[in-house]
Amino acid sequence: MPSAEISTDSCHRFLFDQGRIRGEVVHLSSSLKEALARKDYPPALASLLGQALTAVALLADTIKMDGSLILQVQGNGPVNTLVAQATDNGELRGMVHCPEDIDQAGSYRDFVGDGRMVITIDAAGNERYQGVVSIEGDSLAETIDAYFIRSEQLATRIWLASDGVQAGGILLQQMPQADTEEFFQENQWQHLVTMTETVTHRELAELAPQQLLHRLYHQEEVTLYPAAPLYFHCGCSRDKIEAVLIQLGQIEIEQIVIQEGLVRVECEFCNRAYQFDAVDISTLFMATNQPPSLRQ
Image 1 (cartoon, rainbow, N blue to C red):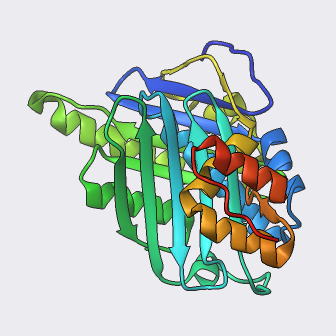
Image 2 (image 1 turned 180 degrees about the vertical axis):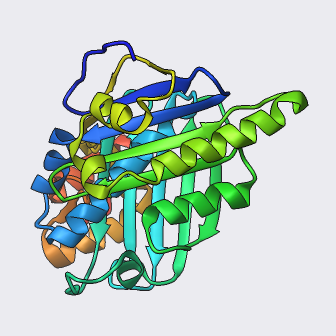
C-alpha cells in the first residue's frame, strides 16, 4: 500500500486491485470537536452526531457533484431530528434535536424510534434528488445499508463508529461489471465484507485511515489515493437569514418585532445568533420594493 499524507480529518478513496470494488475511509477529530463545541450534547448524542458526520462524508465522496449531500433521520423517539451535511469541498456540519432527557444506556432505536431517513443530493446543474426509507436496523449504519438495498443501487455497505471525541467509518461499494465477471465479483465482495465485519468500534473511531486499512486488508492488493481534507463549516449568514425572513412575509415579521421588540434567529448548526430590530426589518423590506408598514 503506497504511503500518503494523512490529514487530521480526511477521506481517502481506495481500490482493490483484484476486483471491481472501491471504498472510502473517513476519520474525524477536529471537525467533530468543532461541531460539538457549539452545543452541550450528552455523550450518547455526541457519538450519534459523529456517526452522522462520518456517514455524509463517506456518501458525498461516492458521487461526483458540485453541491451538497444531506442526511436526515426523523423519528418519533427522544431524538426527533438528526441532520448532517457534507459539501463537495469537504465542509461538514450537523445537529441533533432532542427536546427531552435520554437514557445514556439507550440504543440507536431507543433514541430515534420509528420514522424515516431522507438522503438529499443537491447538485448544481441537476435536479434535486431525494431518497426516503423507513428507519430500519439497530444502528445508523444499518439504516443506510437498508437505503441502498431498497434503492437497488450498486451493492454498498457502510460501517460507522464514534466515541464522541473521534469518529471513523468505511464504505465498500461494488462497481459495475460485465456478466462474465459476475461470479468472481460476488465472491470477492463477500470476502471483503466478511473481513470488514471484523473491525471493532474502537478501531473505526481511533485508527488513522492507513492504519485501519492495513489492519483489515493487509493481505489484499489495495491502492490508496491521496486524502481529501474534511472540516467543520456552517454556511449560515445574515444574508441567508434575511432571505428566509422575506419569504415569511413582511406582515408576519413586523408582528414579531411589535410583540418581541426584535427578531432573533439562532442557527441550529453553529448556535450563531442573528438579531433584527425595527430599523433592520424596515430597511430589509424597503430593499425588496415592499412599502413599509411597521407601526410601533
